[in-house]
Length: 250
Ligand code: BTN
Image (spheres, rainbow, N blue to C red):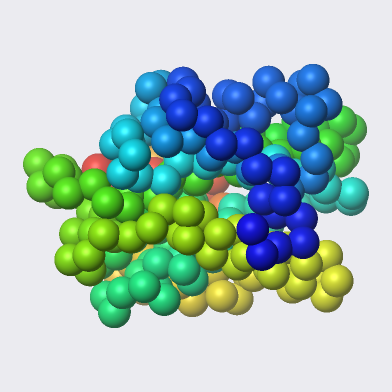
């Protein structure tokens, strides 16, 4: 892989329950270096956000996890992991097809209104610092059978062609590495670009706050990763994922 550290240790597996799980086990055994990638051709128990499962097709989709051992990432700054990884996927998907690509808060990548990629991040914290992080990325690549799910799409469905998953993996790793270095060297944390890419920004959208439906306009994402929304009465509030969610069909 043409990178300096992301994916230089590459563990390629045929079938695993979840690459995030394998990465966590290997990290616990101190077997992974900073930037190690666990990539699997099949996940039998892929994990998604909010305890949901993540479905991917064997040999067709891309499922991998990046293990990170940051030097000085504060817990209060950890949303940078979401920004840098979501923007890396966003950038690569954008480069491969002409339709509009957006990041749906907190960390889904959408083509039009349909989800093409999801990200699940787990961190280990000691005191005020993130000791390690696992950034799990799932991209619907060559799956052609998503027609029943109106909320999902794949690269093949949007471009009409089959994509090389390894080439895609390398591109995402390169994009992530470039962004990681810029953040470490220059403090560029991707906030402005992340707000720019925000799905439904400025549009009245259905949400649930503590399970109660309502409409609001997403305005931005703050440093802690909370979504800043304008309510119908003009009030502006910021909420985290523990309270706020997009309504099922946004
Ligand atoms: C979501 O949108 O709900 C997050 C999906 C994250 C899926 C990826 S696939 C690779 C890694 N391993 C997992 O079990 N989950 C993540």
